[in-house]
Image (cartoon, rainbow, N blue to C red; front, side, top):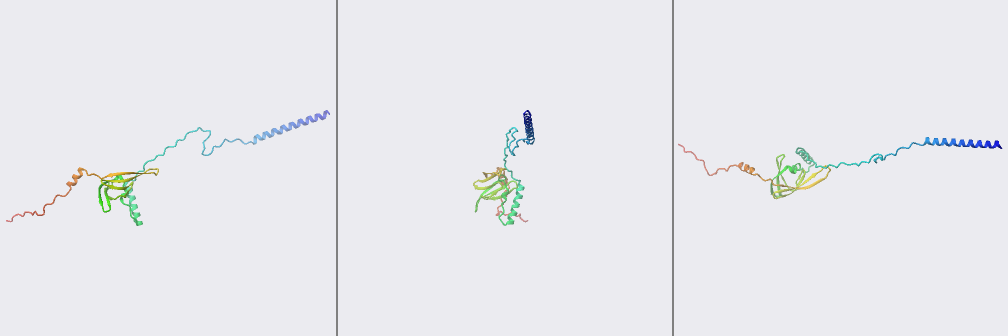
Length: 204
């Protein structure tokens, strides 16, 4: 009986040792096979949670007025448009389409069979043109001709594509006293009367 008890006790102890050994191996292998934890990925376009929050200040959009090309560039553009119109057999644009409103002076206002007309002088090129209501200019249009003044619709273009329209009035240029005196002095002298005959000296 004692031998049987001793044998059973030894067998149980061996089983306990074997189970403990197998459990230890399982835990060890489980720890080795467990993958290392990766840091949380930051979403594309999102904010890094470990970075201090900073307020992003967007610079304000600058909006300025578009400057007109030089007079020579506008004249070359007008010539190209005129050639293209001739090739297409359509009415060519008028020379005033190359002029800015601040580049001309109103030198005269008069009535024609077509209605009121005005004489304007292009100051950069020293040329004069007859214009009627509806005439187009580089930065505006002639709306009406009134007594002593012209009414224009000016168009301003900005860098963002916006267009502003405003009314501009140009008065008839007044002739100065110096110009009036110069014109008077340049007028031809009064011719001699035709009924006055030259004196013929007596023949001896």
